[in-house]
Amino acid sequence: MNKKLTRSEIKHKAVIDAAITEFRAKGFKAASMDDIAKRADVSKRTVYNHFPSKEALFGAIMQEMMSMLCALESVPYSANASLKSQLTLLANHEIALLKAEGFIATSKVIIAEAIHSPELIEEAMQQLSKQESPMANWFESAIKAGVIKASSPEMLVTQFLAVIKAFCFWPQLIQNAPFPDDAKTAEVVDTAVEMIIKQYGV
Image (cartoon, rainbow, N blue to C red; front, side):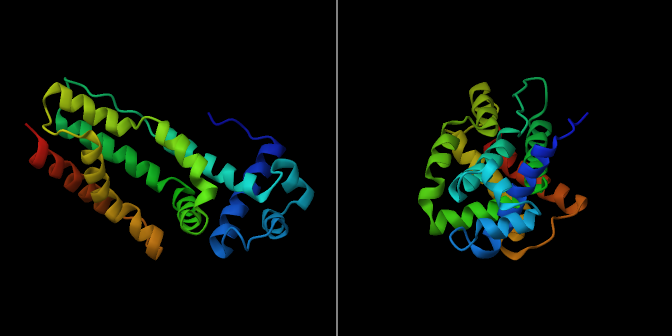
């Protein structure tokens, strides 16, 4: 059961959502706290009560993105389940994250500012780099178990995600394409899974 948000939490979320839209439309530097307040339908004072500066607001957006990434359900390696079933589960969890409300919009803002204002995201990226990747952990365990032959779990993660994101992230990010339907998504998952099994399965 989802916890009911307080009025303050509702306003907090409204401000973040409005900031994502404003930053995406105008860029971080051109967006104003006044316009963010108007879009969120709150007073400017309310915006500053929650976020003392535009930089703090952008930091909150980065934190929201990291929370989404951390919410990715960990899939522990199991010697009792088939390689295909576990890889399929990993792929479906990743797609659920990419499809989550706000993920693409937030990604657009962060990627744009990474290009124009890299200092804004430097600290957040340092924090993110310290976090363990559930997917990398799974591949490392599979390699140690001898069911996958590879020297670098990170390389496998990169290849696995490249297939998934080619259809379920980059077209939506760059071209505003609709997310693939269930049939296409299943095809993407099967392609990513078979690639790993054929190339690295023992």
